[in-house]
Amino acid sequence: MPTPTTHIRNFCIIAHIDHGKSTLADQFLLKTGAVSARDIKAQTLDSMDLERERGITIRMHPVTIYHEQNGQKYELNLIDTPGHVDFNYEVSRSLAACEGAILLVDAFQGVQAQTVANAFLAIEANLTLIPTLNKIDLPHARPDFVIGEMEQALMIETDDVKRVSAKAGIGIEELLEAVVHKIPAPAGSPAEPLKALIYNSHFDTYKGVVVYIRMIDGSLKVGQRVKMMRAGREYVITDMGQFRPGMTKVDELAAGQVGYFTANIKNIDDVNIGDTVTDAFKPTAEPLTGYKEPKPMVYSGLYPVNNNDFEDLREALGKLKLNDSSFTFTPEVSDGLGFGFRCGFLGMLHREIIQQRLERESELNLVQTAPNVTFEIVKMGGEVIQVHGPQDVPDGGGIQEFREPIVKISFLIPASNIGDLMGMCTDRRGTFVRTEYLSTQRVILVYEMPLAEVIYDLYDKLKSVTHGYGTMDYEVIGYRAADLVKMDILVHGQKVDALSVVVHRSNAERRGRMILKKLREEIDRHLFEVSLQA
Ligand code: GTP
Image (cartoon, rainbow, N blue to C red; front, top):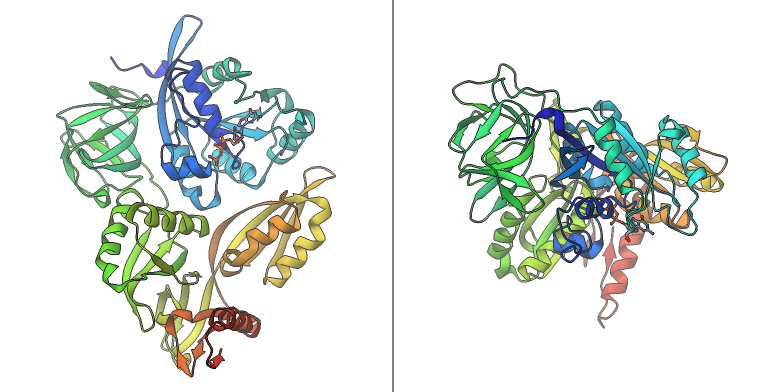
């Protein structure tokens, strides 16, 4: 029998990177007996190798646990979310499957850029927040100071903040109690026609696409014929279950529950995240609102060092795409590098991770060209085109207007660094929006800035200026016209297309000199003379 909605709680944990989400999720598994102390590996839910190695969560992992309180058994569905900016869209997805969120803040580091960004995403999605201070076991923890920041930045009541240590297992019972007590039970009804939200999927070699669902209304059984409302496709359910945390079969899923199904779906692109699943014969009236599609914003070329590896690279990219639909690739040819692919990523971390996964999983030797953002070009005559790389930029005469993506970027920094940060933003063509003091020592600084300036080296600069204490978060707000030019690099008088870049006219000389300097260092080892021009 499926758990009745009154005894279900669906929630996620949101936090800035490294504030302890995965550790807390592990602690929940341990305390509720879902995993034994002997079996628990550090960060059980971070199952991808790369995630464990780098200690960051990339994909979200749902898990169903059971918790007893006052003689009643509750089903808690926990969705672990990633904390890094590049994966923000995964946070919004998990929020839509929940009624509540634990907002975790590190008791030493305090409120950070993604704490604020994620908290506001949750508030906008109408979730009940449980503000929680983590790492209270740290000898240098500053609980009262950090709670003061939380009150200032997030408008929460000081008395509502729970205090825990995910690592030492302190305060976990009380936190689970708060989840049951404060987060509302799901509102749907099992008597209504089937309505379920697809919030994620992954590809399994044997089962095909595993579709992750949050049941809103109705119930679902093996053999039932369902329809994906937006895609318009119908399937018969072959298998279903819940993540506890391993995939565990169940006979039925009903309103309020979280689980998965398979239906012999062979292609991950056939499943649209955000789509609504309903009964093919007794459909629900209205589909759910769905999600914003994540769009790749950073592009770069990827070429095999050995041109014979081109087909292997295509196969490897196709495999990666099976589990990550936000990543795109299309073939391209470069005079210097031969056959390769232009790949689209959500951001720089996403790009780095894809490259590492490729090298690890396929043993290919790869060359990656400099990253660029997606530009918009208005051609003479008014046609607007999207350009994903310098080689696609039409000749100067054909361009009426060049546009670039603009982001709204928030920094959370020590107040003593505000002057340096403002200078850095001005140098990068930023426009000041506002400042807000969290305390006398820490401040939020908001700018609008071209994305191209952000992906270049901003994060590293921020870390060095603030000695590691500054954090940032950004979202793309639209395109704006800019004085951009394509800069070609000539080696021995010959244009090398893979080295071309699109830059702001005012930066062209500086960037050109930098590229040439780097090239000279590379080419120096030769004995003959090579002329270099930008
Ligand atoms: P991402 O997945 O990268 O977003 O990070 P996360 O928020 O899941 O953080 P994670 O659980 O990986 O914890 C980050 C680090 O903090 C790890 O080294 C943990 O061991 C440590 N940590 C987590 N909780 C506690 C705690 O309560 N006390 C102490 N002392 N350390 C903790």
